[in-house]
Length: 110
Length: 117
Image (tube, rainbow over all chains, first blue to last red):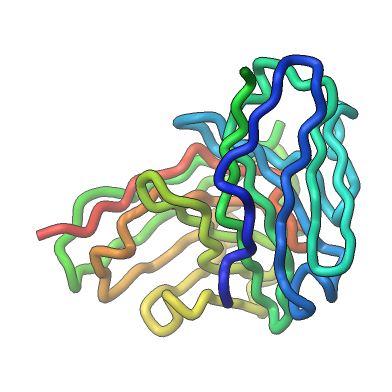
């Protein structure tokens, strides 16, 4: 199972909106509504930001939103803040009881 | 609150074995699927293994199948990962994680496994 494809880096100024894409195939992202997104600050464990494509766990800012179109899922961060600077990973159920992570995206706040 | 605390990591020679443990608290452990996920130094996340709430159903990534064994003791609120025939490419931080419905809603702090001669 190949990793999902994410851009290596995305940047934006404070207050702007950015979108991170996560491209898979019809065997994973395109076939299930089970994409999750994780934020990871350096030296820390990842944190769940979005699950089941577009749902936010309790305590996660509504500046974070998820969506999907075809084989590509997206995470949008609106009103970008300095604390959003981190690595972001998508993850999708891929059938046959397997899960696959994305390659990861480094978000930089300019 | 949910707490997951891993232990058992360390330095091991290629071909050696190591057993990781994860102590869970703050939730009803026996209600949840659990998972091990790893991250090689400077690299991305890789799912390693899942175990159902009762332990009756288990899944492995192809990269560890036949070498790693996941298990749990619901009476002790503990998750385990027995790692045999370790290779250099198994070097990573290993995270214990709570895994409802194919997402990871809680992570431990991780334990570093280094495979080197």
